[in-house]
Image (cartoon, rainbow over all chains, first blue to last red; front, top):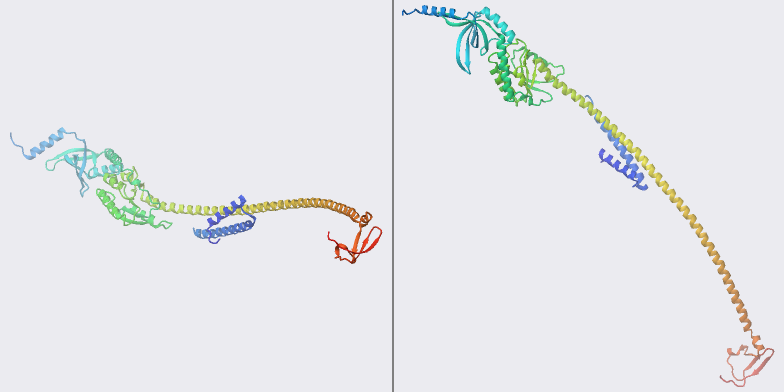
Length: 62
Length: 435
């Protein structure tokens, strides 16, 4: 997870979503998938917040 | 014939001229060798040329008083002073002096003729430059977004130059503009050569100084003698110049030819300075706009991504709930089916059991009957086997040594007992014969 880029994380999220929507996951993997998805969302949000702060810093004094 | 003295001849010539010629004559000619003497009188020659070849020439003069009014009128109408090479229409008196010879005394000069002449020459130059493709030659350069390094062609003493430098260096935003002056005469007969040479110097140093443009400025002072900027060679030089050329020549009438061929013609040195500074301001403004857009774009990107994430979260939650519900439904179904199957199984078992029970019952009865039958049969057979029946029919039973005789070994002399229906007969064996 730590090695993911934001894009990769988003792609993984989409894959999970597709898997869930197609109903190809099993109950055994469901909780793992949902947990992974939640982690990914948290990861992406964190990443966004960091980037936002950096951007704000970058714009300071402009 | 009696020879004349020189004075007689020259006096005669004078008389003939005065008699034959109109007192005032209009003549067209080119000014040459034009000079003003210390007392203020002006001396020159009126020349007629074909190409560079002089066809005719005559000395002429303008007395100080006449010259002052004629020159003032000429300058106010044409914007230029009388000078060599200029074609003029002059009103003259032909004078002949026995000592000083033939000359013209100029009474008046028609400035509108020179103006028209100049306009004609100017138009010819424009036509030529247009035909040769020079009019848009310099304008082809794309300007850098910010004009930071310039060469200035001007006169260091010109008021326009000072204004320009003050404005450029003292801009309130503090933009730094590199500039280097290349001195040139900005008016008069030598101005064209001086300008051409200054342009050459700029071209030589353009690369070394990393110049963005060259500005030609003059201003303040008299509006006279701008003819040099209508020069064909200067026009060609500017057109072919390796840098964009800006002009701020400070003219009030038509644009000069230098303006027409320049990249960006501006009215005054101040206007040139403003133009250059505006490139800085526009660039800075556009930077501000870009920063704003960048900010906006990143904000909206963040928002979009956050919404996407939110959407994903909701969908994943929804999907997993749905899936759980589906699975739960499946499990319930299975449960029901299993329950049903169990119920069915139990019923079947019960049936089977009762069938078995039935069969068992039947088997039991059958068995019982068979036993009864067997018993009855046994009863019959046993009755049939009862020895009393046989004894009654005359059969007997013989025993010896308390045993049936077939179970004993008999010898003559042994005693035997014979049982009949109603008797017990004891005997002794006489003889035994084998059958």
